[in-house]
Image (cartoon, rainbow, N blue to C red; front, side, top):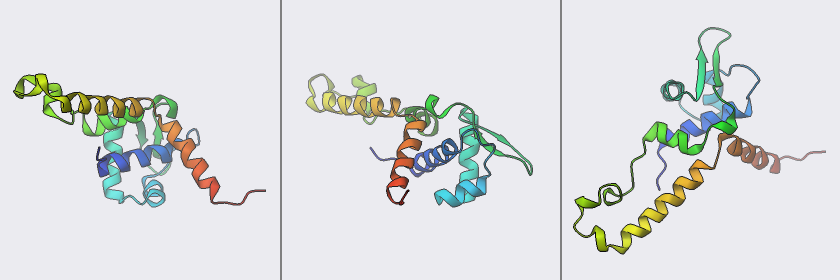
Length: 145
């Protein structure tokens, strides 16, 4: 599975907001700087994420972005589906009649299993899970007393 830049950046932005969940609005420029995402592209992504109900945005000097739901309520699968759609990896999985070999094709069953495994991992991984993993990874590199 190849993850698009749109999904990568969108997930990074959501994890950034999850790390600051409950602390008030976060401005686009702050997210862009921390996550190394070009700000104009991030603006477009945040608009999309808002449209899908993942974030709420407010304009103005006290404005910014916040998660619209708890980070534990947003799955990676929801984000991927929102940003990329739910297209199957092979047409024969969703349209078996389009392939004359589909009824006796061993590959088809394997690709379906792969797709189901990926979907399962994405569905059961929340933005909160990723934020917690991020926190653990960042704390490994720092000395704490």
